[in-house]
Length: 281
Image 1 (cartoon, helix red, strand yellow):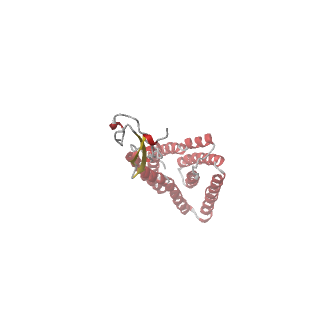
Image 2: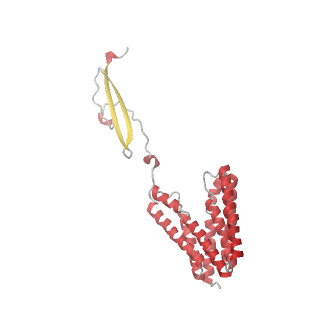
Image 3: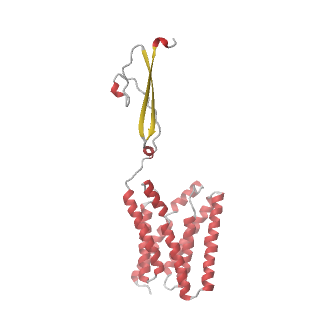
C-alpha cells in the first residue's frame, strides 16, 4: 500500500519524467523544419520505447503501480512520435536502419519477452526476470550520455551537454529512486541509482568546464600574409625591421608566415636589391 510520501515521490517522478521525455522536442522540430535528420541517431528513442513498454508490463504484474503505468504510457506515445518523425525525414539508408531496429527491439524483442514470461514463468519468478530486464534497459538509458561526457572532457566544452537536461535527469533519478526505495522495490531503485551517479557526474563536469570556451579560430590558426607598409619609422614594421633603402636601389621583400609548433608564427624575410639602372625603362 502506498503512503502519502510514496505518492508524492511518484507524482514528482511523473512530472520530471514528462519533462525529460519532452527534452528532445526541439531536435525533432528542427528535423521537421529542415526535412532532414542531419545525422542524428534513432537508437536512444527506440531503446526508450522498449524500456517504457517493459515498465508498463512490469507494473501490470504488480499492484499499486498506477503511477508507473501513467508516465510510461505517456513515454510510449511520445517516443513513438519521435521515431515516426525520424523515419519520415531520414535518408533512405537511415530510414531502413530505423525500421529494422524498431522491428527487432520494439516488436520482436518485446513480443519475445512477453511470450517467454507468460508461458515459461509464473508468479514471482516472472516479476523477477522481467524486473531485471527492465533494470538493464533503464540503466543503459542513463549510461547513454557517457559518450557525450567523454567528448566534454576531450573538447573541454559543455556545448553538447545542456545543464538543464543534466539536472532533469538527475532529479528524475532521485524521485524514482526514493519511490522504489520506499516501496521496497529494488527493480525501480537500482537503475535510478545508476542514473543518480551519472547525473551527478554530468553536473560535476559542467561545473569544471562551464567557463572553458575554445576559440576555434585560435585553435585552428591559418597562414596569413603580412604586407609591408611604406613608412619612415622602422619600428612600425613588425616583426621584421628593414634597413634603410638607398636612393639608387629598389627593395623587394617577401614575407612568409608559417604556422609551426602549436600555432607559433615563424616569419622569414628575403631581401634582394637591384640597381635601378638594371631595370627596364
